Image (cartoon, rainbow, N blue to C red; front, side, top):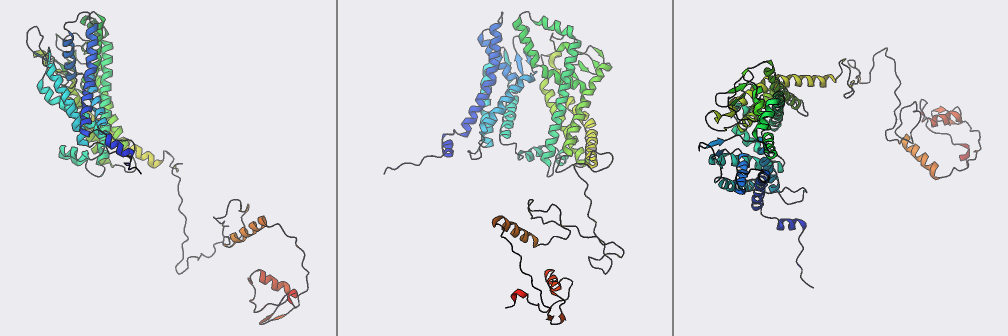
Length: 563
């Protein structure tokens, strides 16, 4: 016989062929960075090839693509090709471009974890290994792009490369790894240690994860309403100033390639304009140049702004009118939306929140909303030059607190009122007449008889009519063996066995012919202790089990039993 090695099981084969976790994670990070950089490179090269007046060669286009990829991460760029020779910063990050690397990093984190779909598959890659591998691979490509970009006309700021690029990589990859592991609650206590004491006490307890999750969802809904309302304000103002927007669009360039590039740039900056308009509705507004604020009460844009369609939608210079004040409806709706989300989570089963805990979650929602708007306002603005162009966008140190104040002002009473209304509807069963709801039928308690002192449990008062007991049907009796009409007497426990025996005997054996037995007159006999009147009386007593009769000592034999 030949000696054979045992064949590997499918699990062993997968573990043997599986690449190391760190190398696979590094590869995922490199691929994510390469896909984002490649997408922007293809777009820039297409525009450069189709342009009738290219200013530089392919090397210049590749430098611009690398610079745009770094700008999408929040890295500030520096222009060197100015007429004066001075370096001018460009720090406004197109938020639509930022969504691309964040999405790619999230997918890379999920793929690097390699969580199996089947329960008997190999274990997923550890969190730290997958997270560290994706971040290192992504930062390697980012560092190479920054080095390549440093020799072009648009150079990157190394301070931004050291801060914003790792921050985006760590946040995006961490979110992907965390979601791949099923969003475990273990990182929650570590996050809570960073929060201030009052906020940490507000979310502590057994249901801390539920309250924090409800606050994050409510704050996300409020932020979506704020940015969505801001987009509506931008669209309405652009239509209102349609002539100026069209003139600025046609003034920038003549060819269709340049106009297409301006259109793409405007689309990439639409989320930024939405955040600007949200800050305008909140009250702080935004600045169009150093010392030129624009808010609902006054508008003072810089006099020499570059022509751009989105800048044409800025309100006219002068004091605000009632039409400008109507923008305040956007944060009102956002605060009420946040309160509605908190109230819905407060009445959710199996554990409802009290009014105090609901108010605490509403205040926590306001704090989270303030953090989100602060981050968005910081990313949406930045410098476009020096002197008057050094400040563009909403002041993030005012926009965030304003969003938190509006959310707390309208979200807290909305959450309490909606919670009370939902609880009242549940108690009333949605029936204003006070009758029982069809969902929860009224249960009438069974009345127990009150016993008099000294009486037994079956005693009744004098004068109370005696009611016959209700007929009871055997619960074990089959449906086909039951009676159509219940008998008048109570159910006898042994009746089922007699019925089963009789039914089975009738089905199994054919009926035998019955012959009448000869009847003989029974003689009267004397019983010990009494005289039997006749056979009929004796047989009647015997058939009824001698119920209600005189107990007999013996029985007179039948005629056919006499030898």
